[in-house]
Length: 148
Image (cartoon, rainbow, N blue to C red; front, side):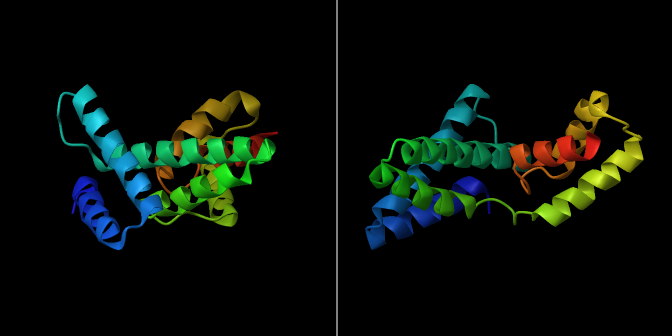
């Protein structure tokens, strides 16, 4: 089942349950899918495109939530956190820090990276290998730590 079909099914369920947070989250995903397809000339999205789209939506909500918490607006931050949980359901299971570190170390050995000058090479391979399974920011932090 494609992401769009899955979202449509869950959207119907959320409407029946009158779950407003789920409705907002699922409508955001559906809107992003339609916008991406329109920009790409109405082609079907690949699995990688779908993952990038979902990750972007999660990142937007994390950023918003962080800003709201800094401003003391818990009333606005909590719905964002709830939407993150709903949207993350569409991502593959996320890797933990130890697994990410292990993969990064293997890539460093494979590429022979020796310092920060090789960060781009390591990040490119790591991002491709862990696409959808790990946050780019987390990967970057671990790569920096290992290369410095």
